[in-house]
Image (cartoon, rainbow, N blue to C red):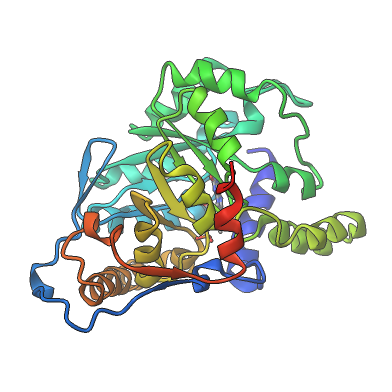
Length: 354
Ligand SMILES: Cc1cc2nc3c(=O)[nH]c(=O)nc-3n(C[C@H](O)[C@H](O)[C@H](O)COP(=O)(O)O)c2cc1C
């Protein structure tokens, strides 16, 4: 592989595990579900089953795209895939640029085929759809990535803030939407942010381009401006460090992004989910599923048992929240009574006058 990509991927994981890479505020704290002291349901009969784009799943949980391309990434993907099989939930691999450029790295992604993962997300970056310093992905590059993991959906990630902070970042976004519309004719595409969220305008553009669903990847959890800040610091690049600091808290908060998108397209609520309670909050705002990335990273890097324990806790806390809000099924959580506090409240009202 391109040595630069390999070093970058290793650094991203190390920094995400060891440094404070989250935005200053986690906006899930501004959503409060109201406790119902008389739920009148049996905890043991609560159903967490759900349907996402026609696929029946045991839990409304997505393992968000994170990695691939190195041997450590292969171990992480293997552990994640094993729990995806066990919990019958969808899983994404990280950006597949590495294996598109160097097929010898394919097994670090296709390792997930060793498990019965019910829904698999291939992953490519929006910046690579158009010409940068180098040539964009061709149709056959995309086909290669999609077939490699026998994917159900093609996730196209939008990470333009990260590209701005990265020393080696891609700067051209012109033509992405047009190319996305071509690709959406051939593959079921999910458009995903990586920590800065989608506005309603962006969601409308993506819907017009033909994407099937949105993964909001909003502000409140992992901040790629923060991750790139640490990389710039390690490289002694004070200009990029300063940009990372300035945009550390940039973006649309995850809960607001769900509110802006959920009536337009099926929506995965993600960005800053820490536990089953945050997940229930995302569902209560109209998300069809909730996506977890960094919360699962440390466990997946450690062992199958560790990651299984993290997911068991998330699913149990989801069920407890359902019980205490009187929600016997996933559909019913969207009716759960909730309060929205500032500053999220103002974000939520952004389009109310239009
Ligand atoms: C180490 C790491 C690597 C990531 N790599 C990718 C990637 O390759 N493709 C992608 O779409 N998102 C990637 N993400 C972004 C996550 O999928 C997610 O959108 C973001 O981290 C916000 O979720 P979180 O707050 O739960 O971490 C990565 C996240 C982390 C922590």
